[in-house]
Amino acid sequence: MDSADSTGGFVLEIPEMVGIPLAAKRTAQAKQNEWPAGTYIVSADSHMIERDCWVDRFPASLKKRAPRVEFSDGAYRFSIGGAPMIPEEFAKGLCEAMECNPGLSQVPAHVADMDIEGVEKALIFPQRLFGLYIMGGQEDIREEIFTIYNDDIALRCAESNGRLYPVMMPNFWDVTKTMASLDRIKALGGRAVMLPNKPAKNEDGKVVHYNDPALDPMWQAIEESGLPIVFHIGEAIVQAMHGAAGTGLITQMQGFRHQWGMMVFGGVFDRFPGLKVVFVEAGLAWIASMLHDADMGYNSFPNAMIPKLAHPPSWYWRKHCYATFMTDPSGLQLIDRIGRETAMWSSDYPHQESTFGYTRSSIQAVFDSVKDVEAAQRILGKTALDVFDMHRPYELDRTLIDGKRLKARRKPKAKASESAVAAATAAGSTSDPFGVAAARR
Image 1 (cartoon, one colour):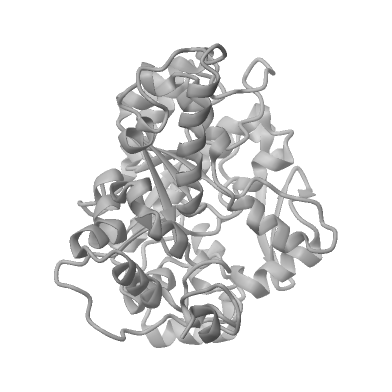
Image 2: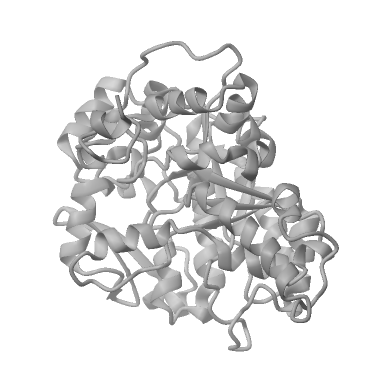
């Protein structure tokens, strides 16, 4: 039977994807069968929503401008300087759709869902922090915003018994401070540094371009740190007319040609051969055509290629780059053109486009498509263990965070039981879904 026949005409190869409930109303997919011996599942992209961590930690003179994250009237309300990030009705819709899943705000619930779905470890990205890139107007307080976020996500991952690993934000706007921010990130146990797709302006008010040689001190500092760079979808917000949701989704997931092109054709990898870059949540299929187009362009426009590269453009993909995907049957069919060693599976938990609710089926789809079991196992976890240094459990030296910043949620005495998590999920939200009250004890 044609796969479209089994999925109601949709071009989807996992039947559970068709008609799936909103993410906040899903339940984790229980074990169905055994995976091959030696399988170790790692999500290279999962999420937790930010806590209201800034206001108590901002300098007194800037408190009125601190980002706020508050839960009221059935929605998470993220604002900065009193201006809401998104309209009220949209905030309520997000809560109903995914943000009121307890696992997005509570570490025990997050880990409990991982247990059911067979995920051993996860790399944690933010939820709403991407919006700060889009809103603008915070250029002079980026240091406070991102430093405090880094501290707080470290505290939250420390609640996971070593299974959640934080992605952190370096100072990318002032290259004289990049190294110091990376030293702090490494000390906190950050496993990757996230750069914005659209980095806005630097300290001098000039637009940042990743192919600008003026950024070489930043690239050098990141190379010396040994931390991988990650670019994540989430900044390309389209207009809000009819069809905006679908248009926005496929626009977000069209790939990272622009960022990859600036780094390759700008000679960044030639100058800093130790850099590793991971492109997150756009899938795999975009890569094959990009590599062809890059090599075609380099040969077709030799008079315009400045600087000259040491290798064909496509060479840099397998040497320096990786990409994550949730489900991508077309990309997996092209895996030998892309490079099996460059692909990493992720759940994207607990977003609407995530595999939450059919995670085990999405994992099985990789085994079914990539017939080499060892290669499939690398895609499903072992490559992420290597790239993000996740072999050892995540640990945080809490003495690095001063007393005021230790007003974070206490480590839970025990992991939430599955029944408790199920009850919280059924309720959809709690009176204190962030654990804010605990965070201020």
